[in-house]
Length: 353
Image (cartoon, helix red, strand yellow):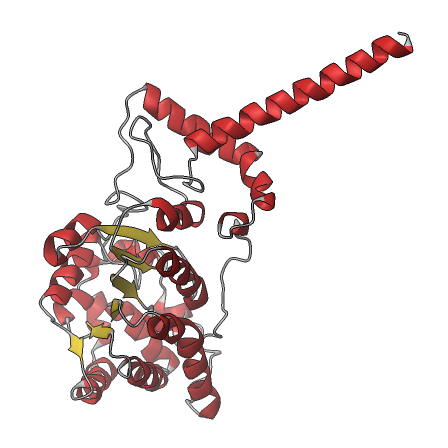
């Protein structure tokens, strides 16, 4: 091969590579499985399934004025039910296993981009008060999808997983006329519930006892920092948005574990600090459902010590619409006292009879 032929061959290879990469990028941009560039096209079907890839795109480009957010205990909410009860146009952005910071950061981005977002239903996991403010279960995120830097979009445009599992899946759904995943279906689950299912992941004989039981200045400061740097930061930044915040009704088995560890009082003191901080925010409506004993004490509603079935998600929406469980400056101490009395004196052995 002479020099001239080699040069032509090299130029053809470069052009072929450039054309191929451009074509791939255009296909990804057009299909855009995670809505990074645009809202869904009506002629395409979309599979909504990977929360940490999809949620930011929902915030960017979907039309909505209300949002449901929280960890996996929010995955079974049906936005259509919230729409019916509150007269909203709702999206759901759940993050399985998320810490407070991840949820707050996502919500902050959503509110900054969408001036119409005026109502937020936010599940604040009860077991998160006594964690560091930046606690995170996962340390790898597709952050290139969260910012406005066009240069790191190469991680999206030329990503084999996104091409195979996102683009090609959506194309296949479109060709087979499979409907897009609805917002009600998005991230929802239908796991088994009941005592036998709970016992598969919970063992009262092996509860970790190597945990602190006191609530002192360090714990007070931790709760204050965790709430202030995450939830209060967002709530106070957007005073025109109403935040319906609730403590998810964890099951009686969660409370039994606290009883075995001797940490019920510690948890209740953390709840008191968090509650007092939230009650100072005029745009927060706070709800606590730990007096819904017919739910909490019935294993048939739970798949483990904290995750409840979609029936309870529906009940929560109804409770909030009716202001059932509303926490106020006048009643919060009484509510905490009732929790202390009930869960300290409960006959946990009766759960296994």
